[in-house]
Length: 125
Image (cartoon, rainbow, N blue to C red; front, side):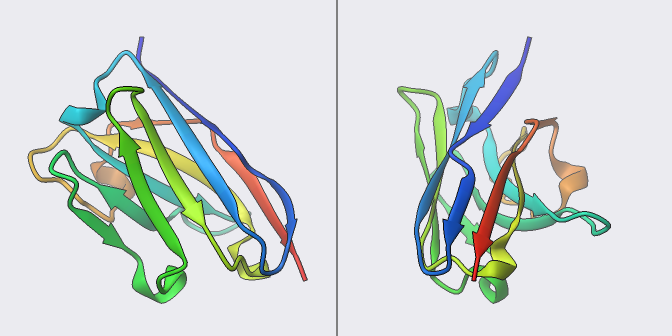
């Protein structure tokens, strides 16, 4: 059974940092592109960042603008999203996802095969 379990969300103040974690089981992340998406009520899920099996990365430049960094630890089968200088507009449920595609790095949710349940990040002003 394939599972992606996110953790690390919480309530923080504007300017704070958080590190989200995604623990994968049932799949080896070194064979997948791993992505982070976020979603607020009433809006579509939006792309944040992705990292492929060659450690190539893609970010949504407009929203993260150098504040976020995605990384992976293949030995632990974990993916991380380091979020710095958080803003109230970063408030959302954050989801980890896995895409089984050579090179990958898609920014489209439809291309991802597996999803976690999400972790809530709330940034107060």
